[in-house]
Length: 213
Image (cartoon, rainbow, N blue to C red; front, side, top):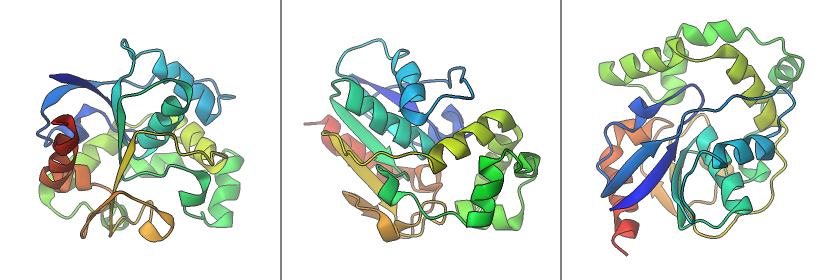
């Protein structure tokens, strides 16, 4: 069975992938230490160093998908499955300029993210009690310094290249990375930013169709 290296979204870990049923061996890559001056390609190079094989298969979720895209630009890959993410700067949603200013000047109250509200539940698509508990746990374990660095890094990401072997799946109801500017290979109807958890069966089926090839 093929090894699949999973890179999660901001603050998340292997728990977000637990509902997937993949015909392969999932290996979860933990976040490596970052330097405040790292841009996204630089950090992706650090993450790539933790992948022990050549021509890997990678599954990247949200921020992890951006990392996976950069990895695919710097080394040969078998396949890269992207879920609920953006591949280029054109697919990144425009952030409110006021918020962008605070992020860029390290003035965001990131501690607020540790207290999920109905607004955050709605934005992420956490509709069931299980999904809300999952989001609560992820938020509680989020390193706010890493969150602040990562958000600024996303704001400054300048990628325009889509490397080969990318398979992008996105939700039609993603309110974190809205579908308006996304060019995806597969669309999940009513899929939210948490669809890898909420609609894991659909995501698994798409990935498995490629693993059989």
